[in-house]
Amino acid sequence: MADPRGFLKVRQRETQPRRPVPVRIMDWKEVYEAQEKGVLKSQAGRCMDCGVPFCHQGCPLGNLIPEWNDLVWRDKGEEAIERLHATNNFPEWTGRLCPAPCEASCVLGINQPAVTIKQVEVSIIDEAFDNGWVNPLPPTRLTGKTVAVVGSGPAGLAVAQQLTRVGHTVAVYERDDKIGGLLRYGIPDFKMEKEQVDRRLEQMKAEGTRFRTGVAVGTDVTWEQLRRRYDAVVVATGATVPRDLPIPGRGLEGVHYAMDYLVPANRVVAGEQVENQIHAKGKHVVILGGGDTGADCLGTAHRHGAASVTTLAIGKQPSVERTPNQPWPTFPTLFEVASAHEEGGERTYLASTVEFVGENGKLTGVKVAETEFVDGKRLPKAGTERIIPADLVFLSLGFTGAEPAGITEQVHAEFDGRGNVARDGYYMTNTEGVFVAGDAGRGQSLIVWAIAEGRACAAAVDKFLMGTTILPAPVAPTDRAIAVL
Ligand SMILES: Cc1cc2nc3c(=O)[nH]c(=O)nc-3n(C[C@H](O)[C@H](O)[C@H](O)COP(=O)(O)OP(=O)(O)OC[C@H]3O[C@@H](n4cnc5c(N)ncnc54)[C@H](O)[C@@H]3O)c2cc1C
Ligand code: SF4
Image (cartoon, rainbow, N blue to C red):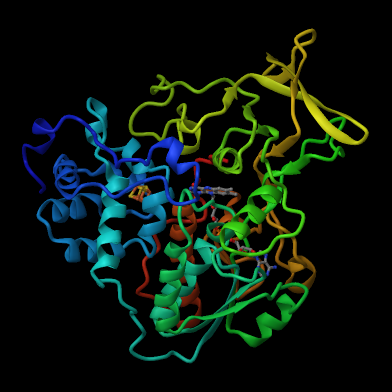
């Protein structure tokens, strides 16, 4: 185990330093800085190597957290990355972006601040990349079986890497011009710079995974054609249908879905030319919805130089501490202060949006009322309406499911009642040989779940193709995520 008395000697939890707000909002670089090695080791040394490590269960990937905490404490970085890669294909993504349900279930968290698991994770992989310890792992022999993976987000890439490594010939189809899914064009660089996607793609290409960008399956090529051409097809197309707010004024110029703001902003940061980009410079911005997507709009609007940014949430402000109905080791819904929230803006809770108001077809404000709870329903309280001035509104109200993209007509894969592509306990749709992983099957969730599902789906595909598999299956499709968006 890491330091047997570590948790007694170091009682404080120390996370990585962040760049000062006035400096970081002037650019798009990551907010966090590397943690000093001595601090990192003493933090890893707080791990108690519990007989029953609840953190394993808290992490959907089943990451072997006490093992790598111990190795970091002993300064054995190369062994640490080997243990981390044993369960997680892409720790540089989870180490930066995961909300860390593992930390909510850390045993130390019962009466002390939890171990900084996510920070240790990202430090292990960053050190590994810096030292050249992340190398391609091509298969020793090919099976002759072929797989098409549709969608190149974390789920599709995890499926592809696992299946390539056991010898199948895998092609990833992506309708965008670049690989990465929401990691590429959804999540801003200040949370994770795109170098983190690109260097992992280099590894995957060297292992033999093939990438086909600019191909929208369902139109450019049909699902049926893919099914005929490949021995198996995996649907990893995400849950991209945004939730709308059809209230009066929805058609006014200035009311947009969050992704219509974030995607072009990411493209511009990547050096692309974007026509008619929605830009927040000098504007009063209102964001509806308080999840990750809303926080990403907030950080982007500040970097654009918005005059003001207000985030409205219809529900109550979550508690800052666990409530009795969210006991340890569950993953509680708490008041979150993401890096974007530290940078400014107002957060208003119990705010029901009733109308977008405007003049000459252009948005000028948002009419909100206090939320009241009537028979369990959240309703606007009469007589409490007020108008918040706004030039731009971003709807960040979550996603209602996967895009149909012709899949039902072309290969008869059906959707479930929640708007997701339906699958059985082995990730297969009702069409033999067509599988589904990640948000497309689960609904909008988290990167850690997408990778976990991708790994488990790869095991199911391998078994379907070969009759047996050595690939691990960390989660079943029935395991539920705690939705955060
Ligand atoms: C703005 C935003 C911020 C987020 N921040 C976080 C965060 O900080 N931490 C976290 O854990 N999670 C976060 N999430 C959630 C997380 O990004 C998703 O759960 C995760 O990316 C899902 O992975 P996926 O591979 O299933 O799908 P996606 O990442 O959505 O990838 C699906 C891919 O499929 C492609 N595709 C779709 N249809 C077709 C087709 N017909 N043909 C070809 N290609 C197709 C899409 O272009 C896309 O590239 C965020 C989500 C959003 C929207
Ligand atoms: S992937 Fe997320 S839940 Fe798993 S160990 Fe890393 S931070 Fe924790």
